[in-house]
Image (tube, rainbow, N blue to C red; front, side, top):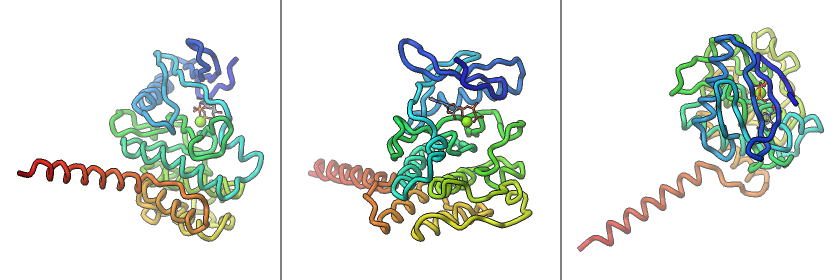
Length: 278
Ligand SMILES: Nc1ncnc2c1ncn2[C@@H]1O[C@H](COP(=O)(O)OP(=O)(O)OP(=O)(O)O)[C@@H](O)[C@H]1O
Ligand SMILES: [Mg+2]
């Protein structure tokens, strides 16, 4: 049964080779819609990370993904704001996926709670699954999606995207900042997001959650991309530190894991070199 139809694409859950799947079907013969649909398929097919829903199969008019039961983060936020442990864990999980995407030369450009699934309804780091690469930009793909008609959601869209520029990694980090705000407050920072994006007003709701999270959140929400965290990796490290300050269970950040791996490799190389010494 079709769940939704948007921009000439219907979405439905189905079974495929006895697997529960989520199928997107292109319903119109419009070159822009087709280019966008194929772009989404090509980007999704190029990705391989546990925090990103993989593409199982593709045809000229269909994209088939595994069905992830548990709902979107938006559906969870409709039940109420998350507590600090849950909000920071979910955003750490989101950043796991974003760190991977950026390392592949992909920016998502439409990160928002509707595009984050939480597997089995668990609001944890490991349950996060990113979907919807319809707005993404990939270094290795020809289509410049931002020149099309579909725009992101004003609440989560960075100001530079609103002004028609193609977003970059820092635009994604802006969206992650808004998402953290939304998780903690139960609503995004601006009542009139379009007015704020257009520079008509600067009224933002007070930063929610504990003060230890405020420097990170206010930097990510900066109008000026240069004031935002430098990378998803750095943003995640800051978030891990804030969790430590707050006495929350230690969740390892990717940067620390990468450091450890480098140390192991260096030690292995040194001992191999030492072993070969006469
Ligand atoms: N793999 C999946 N498993 C379960 N539900 C999914 C899956 N992929 C998407 N959905 C559901 O379908 C909705 C729309 O999917 P998606 O965001 O990929 O499509 P879209 O056409 O680009 O929609 P939108 O314009 O709303 O962003 C999601 O918000 C989610 O509720
Ligand atoms: Mg979507």
